[in-house]
Picture 1 (cartoon, one colour):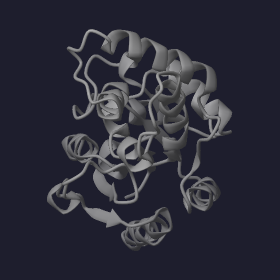
Picture 2 (cartoon, helix red, strand yellow):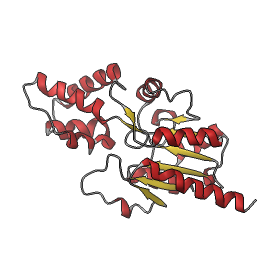
Picture 3 (spheres, rainbow, N blue to C red):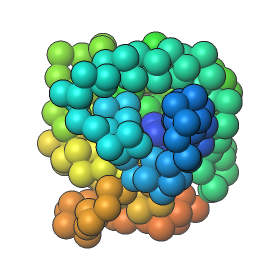
Length: 226
């Protein structure tokens, strides 16, 4: 049966890389540095501010300037988040279909609530989202399944009757640990050299439009057993 669909946030539901790129570009310009390549930012979004800053400034978290850089980055992000963010192609139509089918959908992310909540509000998704679970709301974050269990409990659905889609190995690991069907979003922020075919997801998609036919097939299987 299919009762709900859960999404990772950055790199799966929303393309937020341009927000991060604009902030890093501004920070580098203030220091007399040229722009960091956009692909470098996109490939490290899944590693959070630490990953993006270390890549963009060629430093490690142990660098004496790292804490100041991170604080500056997060201050800018808090102020401008959602400015350039947008749904990935095909996501809007997919969400419309889920709503029309009466299938609740939610978001399980490793982005903190103070960023996730206003981001969903800025993109008009907050009122439609059945559940939003962030790492500061649970004791263990992905790849542990606890956040997925919490989202399903909030929506009143069974994890084993749910699907989780993400663009990182930890998303697939969390979904599998929760007993969910899993989908690897190949259009997301994949780290260089990573091979999603090794994640053991139930399904892989090159774009969000490919997800609906697969979900419809799950629905048909459900009704064929009624």
